[in-house]
View 1: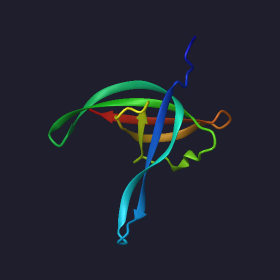
View 2 (view 1 turned 30 degrees about the horizontal axis):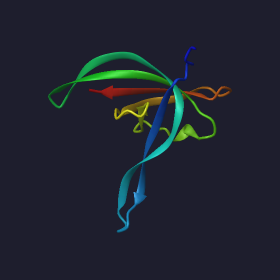
View 3 (view 1 turned 120 degrees about the vertical axis):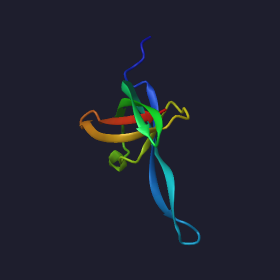
View 4 (view 1 turned 45 degrees about the vertical axis):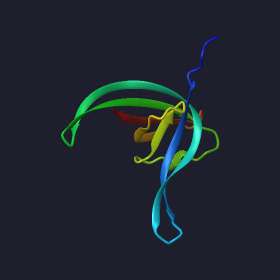
Length: 111
């Protein structure tokens, strides 16, 4: 039996602002949903961040969605793959195919 192209499960996390009990604004991460996706590692590189050498791994993720409006995905959103603790930071997203409901997400992981 062969696995399908959309064999990974990804969870998209979007930061939102909520008003606290005392009236202050709090930043809260809310889960937009869990979707089937195809994940491909594109390339890796290194960058200097604050005097530290950081490895950056870029991923291209094709997400198939059904009824959830994925226009809420912004550049400060995060994504996790298969329930792992690793969070990838979304750098861009666009609709690839309206008929088949596929969105292309570019994300990067900093190690």
